[in-house]
Image 1 (tube, helix red, strand yellow):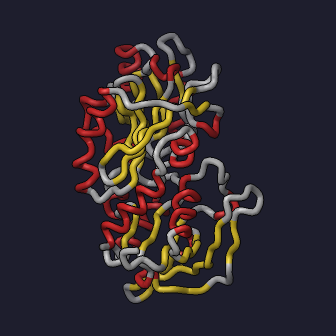
Image 2 (cartoon, helix red, strand yellow):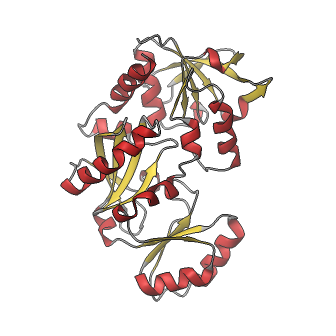
Image 3 (cartoon, rainbow, N blue to C red):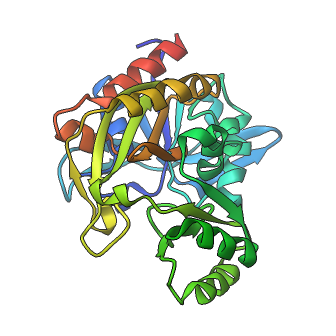
Length: 315
């Protein structure tokens, strides 16, 4: 077991998850099956005192049973550096609270292996990191300047407008060339977000699906296609997207081979990229999803492959 005994999971509360599609649950269940002891805590339970990082954790036992999927023991205050592995798995938004978590967890990594590496999670925002591979992605504008966005739409025709640090399809809008709501939309974004926004060339291939490809330690290990509902431009499954089995195309293999070395160099053991047609749109490093869907549709057991990689790192 490569010296692994205790695994802490920093996550949204286990009672709130949908186990049918939750990747954190899949990862934790696999850890439990290997004999590791699980400890659960939510991000607000992190503390730093005299340079040490503490958390109020609860021993956790999991069951793959809907409605009866977890059991938590009494909370105890522990020095997180006494853990062998910490899974950094709470969902975005990638805000200052999230960033602060990475600063705290950076104090214990890599003696305690944090997955993914917290410093590189902080320095690789998902919609900005991907721009390091501009030739692999659709034309993309990052700005708060309304005039720039209007010029971009005039050039591109249809565009997608979305928040820079959003997640799960929230706040994603398809604006056509003759859409008269763009000004109102930009006003709303300006009131809701302090950060720049993303305007991206609309890819009609999204109607065929938005493919989630999972990479473990820089290598593609599985994929699932997510097809948007008829009247929605978003493919996220919790907003109505439909999952289906898929295989990697030669272009998708090329994309994975191109980005793999950068993922390994940053210590990203688990990454999910989104690909529409021939273009990559995001590199998800905070809490990538899709593990259970890949396995359900006959693909690899990604959770097992991930723990193999974690054990290798610990060794």
